[in-house]
Length: 219
Length: 234
Image (cartoon, rainbow over all chains, first blue to last red; front, side):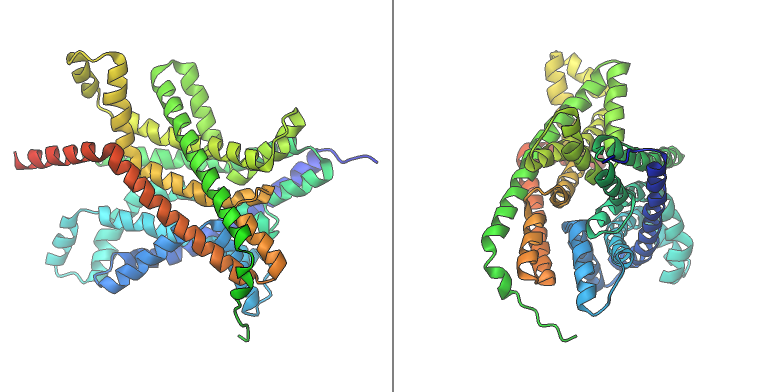
């Protein structure tokens, strides 16, 4: 019996699996971004009940493992009678996970905008929606950008957890190739290198944005 | 939906779940202690020694922080036997968690050390502190006090991430959940219960870390508050 060795075609398989990792990341960030934005607004609402509800949501999501969100949506959806492909369960759970963390990052950014900005825009007779749209959010966006890009790195890495429910992204592809070649060290180093190639530029970008943010605030 | 929840079916597996909770706590506690000690050592080495050391520490931190924990576990558990190092699933989990957490705490503590103002060190020298005293009282303790909240968040994230170790058959809480699920076929109920246990563990860990922080840095924090108040009043 001859074993397959880890060569070009195996590396090609890893590369095609990397596309699924990236797709899942994009789904998580856009879905999680949408829900997270609403939760962040709720978290800074003037009504206490809304604030408490949003804070509870964030506390729960940040207090449970991503793996449990994954299992709960995987089994929960099938209980509710949906036969979902793993991509849907993976996409939904990654969205929920990202929403909890993005909401907290953006709450911090909204609250970091100087209080006088609220007062000044209020004295200009702006409605609360106008205050958000024209005064607060543009400034909060600048503050939020470095940590949001930094969190994107966490999302890329955490999509690897979806391999546990059988979704074939980069980490699962590595396992499949390892099962065929029995060269775990080489295969998983290659997998790690591919993740690094995606994550490192994002980490550096986050750092660059952060430096620029602080440079800007000196004026 | 015609599904009836049956949480009673899980009750007979209490022993398995308690064993899982225990291993999750032990792994988290051990990796938090070792990971933060390593973080203090690496961040200090990085700030004191030359270029080569700094490059090595930075490479370690960047490699670990930019690759998934799951893949790191695979390399430790499946990869190391290939180079002659066979470890049990529990040891692999402990190694993986410590290596991972050490990289994050190095990065966090580095930021704390860099935030210590140079004039503080000069003031320490002017007071006749030895370099060891300066390192301890002026640099490392205030640095850790400053970044302690960030460290705590990382500790909680590590405890939650320990669930991923079930993928290399470490018998911690998530693995207990998978076992009970395979025995009872009550998937949703099992994962609801285990998720609530994780939530309780996260809240408990946060409370313990707050208590530890208060006993380590409580007075320091109190003192800074009074100074800043005094500055405001002046």
